[in-house]
Image 1 (cartoon, rainbow, N blue to C red):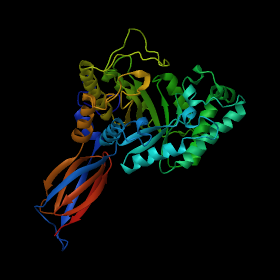
Image 2 (image 1 turned 45 degrees about the vertical axis):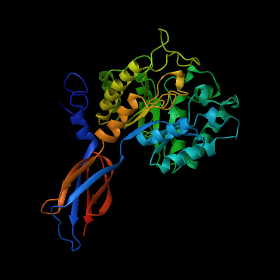
Image 3 (image 1 turned 180 degrees about the vertical axis):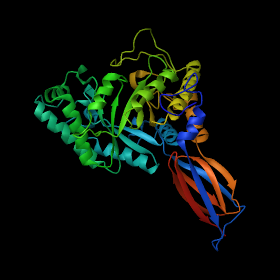
Image 4 (image 1 turned 45 degrees about the horizontal axis):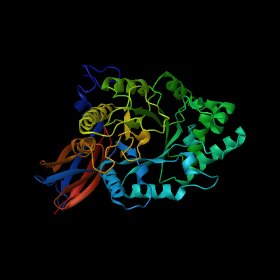
Length: 420
């Protein structure tokens, strides 16, 4: 097996996945324990426990909004926080600002603070999108006015939420923006798609220079690659920080070989890959034929035990494949609950009644156990012990003393403890 992109041996990406995960998702932590006099403390038992992952395991957290305290809302929030360290929050222009100047700012701030209190990083989604959800009805027809309003929105949101939301899907689905007919699409056509995309990223960057800016699309093909190639500044440097890839699998499960090929195709840009919107179902289509992604009527049967078992198996293969690829930095599930899920599909990790599906338990095992450091070892004659740990923050303790260490993937860290 080779870890070099494009040189995967074996019959499937699952072959050697555990070894690739160990190579690409872990680092070395050296712990030095001394006594009160500063002398090496040999034979001391040291424990290292994960506090957080560096990798972003996330989900759209649209159900985190509001202060409702009914049982379903509590189950949603508690199970979300128990599993994820990353949440996507809704900034669709139509919903965020249904009337000019009337925004959902306070609601989104509350969501952001709720996440921050639990160590969950937040992404805003999206700043620019020509879908009707991203184009409020009150926009005028004048393309110059629309451009000014759009750029003003980008700057205002990125600046106002700085420190609370430092990651944005700046432009969503730019490969085919003119499949919709509305004021924002007309503006992009009038002023030129690529110049407008570049300006959107410049506006976001000026408003929050430290933010991670993502370009996101469901078109995992050469057309999207051409958009990415053109999203550069005057000297050819990328205006974005990560590439977002959607895999809504309403029409069938993508095999690991296809996922790996997608990773390889987009890894050539040398930027982190975020799998931003990923759907695996636990119920089947109500009738044969292609999925209508613009339909408001449910096209799916309810969740059921057999398909829940298949969803769990597919979930483990999906996450294991992506977690083992060195270019992938984030995976976001879509949606967390069957309740109010997109297209009425049984896409959740929890059922409409709030109970967890097998796929939830599978992810909980992977993220919080299999890929989670909790180890003990004894110091040597020099008072040292080395651990191989999953990248992130870790709590180190020995003899009543404790400290927090940060370890980057494929990197190393060190921490010292003084014990009595």
